[in-house]
Each structure stands twice: as structure tokens, then as C-alpha cells.
Length: 116
Image (cartoon, rainbow, N blue to C red; front, side, top):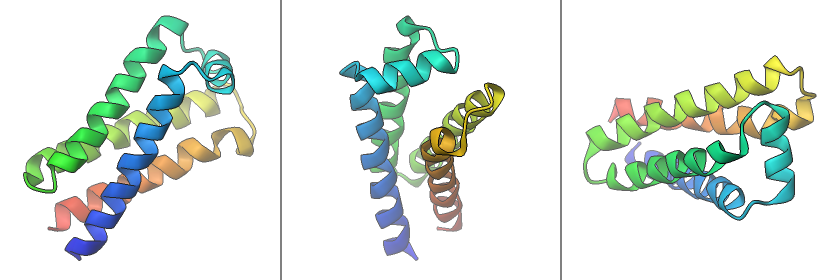
């Protein structure tokens, strides 16, 4: 079970760091998507920092389980917010899919963190 948790946590960490990189590099599609759901441009770097912190928390959580649980819980809330933002503007399934996948991966990570 621990190996599964490590694999899932590492996958989520890489995904959120990739997502944060897109925000920090001001990738046009990312900036447009965030503007579409109502995120102001000056908030995008702050959201990237939250993703980076969540990934760091997951890595630290491999040694300090409480930190991992808190990081996973934070990412669950972060991606729940992302899903809600997309649904609020009635985005198509394709536009909300990545947020849903990362939300599910965050929930699975949290569940595995709690079980250990």
C-alpha cells in the first residue's frame, strides 16, 4: 500500500508542478483558460505557488505523513475549486477534464495518505 501511495503522490506532484510551470511561464492557453473562468491575471502566480507548495508538501510527506495529508487535502480543495470554476461558466467536458482528473488524483492521494 505504501508503494502505491508513493507512486500516486509522485504522479500528482509532477502534475501540479507541470501545471504551475504553465502558469508561471504565462502559457497563452493557460492564461486564456484562467481568464475564462474569472481568474484575474495577477492571481495566476499565486495559484502556481499553491500548486508548488502542494507538491513540496507531498514530497515532504513521504517522510512526515502529517505534512503529506495536509498537502493532499489542500490539493483536493484547490482542484475542487478549479472544477467548480469551470462548471460555473458551463465549460465543455474537454475544458474541465484536466481539473477533474487532478481532483480525482488528489482525492486518491489523500485517501492513501490517510490509510497509512
